[in-house]
Length: 420
Image (cartoon, rainbow, N blue to C red; front, side, top):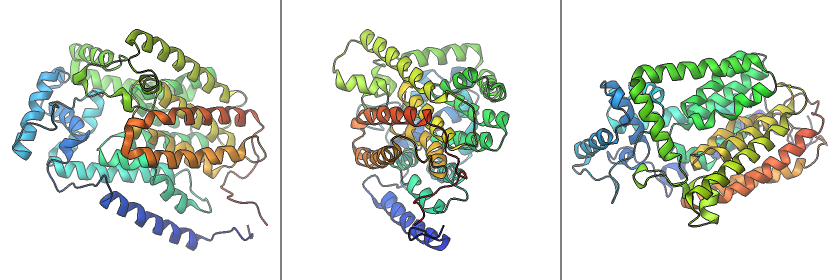
């Protein structure tokens, strides 16, 4: 491509380096500063909950992992040991571990380190996984480095890193699955996507797509990964522990979760968060019914993008997967601001495979920019995260219309501008 809009590799790397420097400065010295050298920092974010689960599993407390009294006593002692005080925040005594037992097993090696060091290492590992999640689908793109940095500067990435969340695992799972599907390895892609069972609310919609499209290799891969996650979990907590876990899931999945659950629907990016904010004081049973209806409609609408052939190598596939991922976020009963990093892989693949000469092509670009800017503006005020729901709905509508058009026959690599 020889037009005036062409950017060579050296220019791409220079621009990417400048953007990365700015992003890191903002991340380290910005309003939500990372200060891992202070021992109380990991105690003030979500990492302490994962640490709690992993230490209890390591110490053989697996069968009583979801006994909140045991978790509370552990965290109180942890805070006393690190800070001299058992109080994490005013009025807060526990940041519970609610995830599947297999996730606690996965993070046990980190418990061999002091908590502050483990938190810093986990943040570094998460950043590396995020980089892979966007760099792999962008390989060969003329602006791959710049686009990688731009996607990594998505506000939800910083939110995940600062709060010690685990969503980098799911971002790389989706991205690696997309790469495997595109390279003709459907079973391997299914295995990767099956890692989503570590957060079950994110794993439901993808197997439905495979079932409807009769993609048996992908479905077997997801099922086997799910069986492994389930088997490890059962081995750790036993049947009594599994029953306790399911009871915890019912409690935090209620429209109004218990006050001591550390679950805040008001700041979620899903239908529950939307309903709680647009209808303050809505009765719980009414809210639950409306949420189920909206979830069903959203899931059903997202399946419309899959009409036609299954073509993982086509530009259309990235748009289809993006629509399914958006729907996954909206219908999940527990989906916070940091959960939007699930979009990174599909967005990267979409940017590397333009669909030209189709309806709303420019609109989709505007929605992408609007989402990036809006997420950045909302990040310090996550109580307004529900405002992203209408934007997600608009994006889904555009994707559904877009995917009804014939797939582009380009080479599958990113073309930023037409040749002059």
